[in-house]
Image (cartoon, rainbow, N blue to C red; front, top):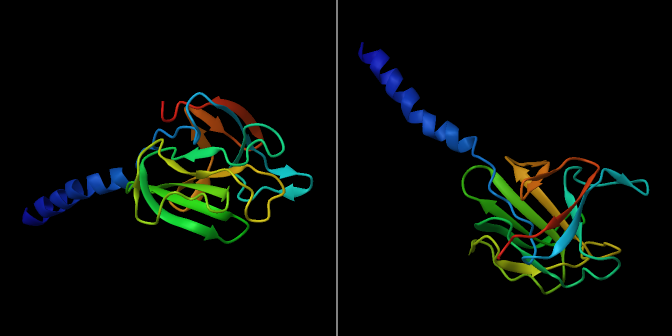
Amino acid sequence: MLAASTLTAAVVAAAPLAAEAAGARPGFKAPFNCGTTWRGSAWTVSDGHTHNPLKSVDWNWGSGEDDNGKPVRASAAGTVEFAGTGGGGYGKMIVIKHGTSGWKTRYAHLKDGSIQVAQGAHVSQGQFIGRVGKTGGQSSSHLHYEQIRDGSVVDAVVQGVTFAPNSVHFIKSTNHC
């Protein structure tokens, strides 16, 4: 009987850990100033080039260099896991870890000298973290954005809108309102 009680207690004690590991997606908001409308494109192939990773979103406010220098805000609260120059064509970037549930966001191609946060810093949803740029060898300014779950990039959900591959959505930001 003692073995059965111990097993039951171990299963009950492990239940909160399993729930945390399967944590709910944070309420991600568009990573821009309140009231501004941005076009998010989750494309897979354009001009013969594959978007990498496939489930990421490229955000544009205008055309050409209209986006250059526009403020970027944290789409959810968390802790800065990385802030600096990333490999693989990301250029200047920030990665924010959102609690212990396995969720992260990546903000890439930020403007040189614009990163406003440091590794280990806590950020609140809507906090100014950097500016849109074109670092990492990009030909035009835009924000490359990823939602990452347990190490894998997943379809982004921003303000309740899902960015499935090959989708384009216009989102009016409710961040930092």
